Length: 329
Ligand code: UT7
Image 1 (cartoon, rainbow, N blue to C red):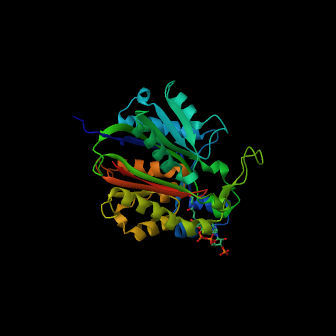
Image 2 (cartoon, rainbow, N blue to C red):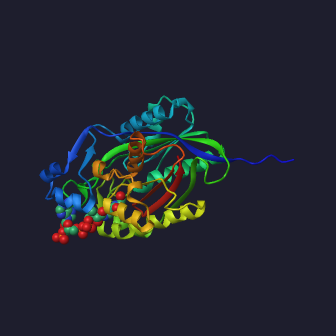
């Protein structure tokens, strides 16, 4: 006689987030570069962003978000055996931000590492943590997106400096048994892609092995925009196909928060109703790998996202990299 094989799923136990205290409005930006509130709002939907204080690092933001997520999940730090931090703005070239957060949580066990996929980082990190958890090798993961993009910006370049902000968000995932159907709670599927030919459209012009400096973010915004909607809708369709779900069965669409127009066009292309779209880019700006966990944190805190609901996350960013993950909350 054989016993039925159960499927392991990575189930969300909680989320948390953290924003620096300094809020910079579009009116403040008008004093720094030749821009206007009108231009920024019309082109991006952004009205303000948060900027880390001097000395406030990515690992500090990430640690605060991690603590909030652990509290929301009702899980002790000592129960975590895997920490993945998605970031492109580490405190130092090495060691990883993840090991600093591990130490900050008082942990000496488990494994902690960083993952670099720029704005797609959080989706890549959720997908990576999911592979660890469903393999049975690890039990509980802390997945963090934390960034201080303000440190990478050329504050004299109005085409980029108005777009980004700092912040961090975190999610606790636990391996639990499911039935192997789309009704299971947890990460149901993930689809990651990359294409390095697009490097020059969005990159940082410095680094340890080139200039030995940190460098500044450079972007040909129009080129990124041109590819974004097609790429993210492709990987969302992959997720629907893999799970037998659809835009209609989705409860919440929580996209990377780069630009209101990209978010609206992606939702419209797939027929996702506007009231199902979680948007925080207006308040947070583009916080790169932190944007999705920040948005999840907001929508959980205000009661929109509930247990059992179907939530799609997706992102596209430098590389290019892009990906989706479909989660039953
Ligand atoms: O998270 C990673 C993914 N990144 C993205 O998704 C970003 C994707 N790209 C975008 O969101 C948009 O391309 C932007 C918001 C960055 C720019 O919008 P756009 O409609 O593509 O504008 P543009 O770059 O074509 O610039 C239009 C005009 C230019 O002036 P001229 O040449 O037409 O006279 C720019 O110089 O707007 C000017 N401009 C500005 N004006 C006022 C550029 N930046 C600014 C600014 N304030 N901050």
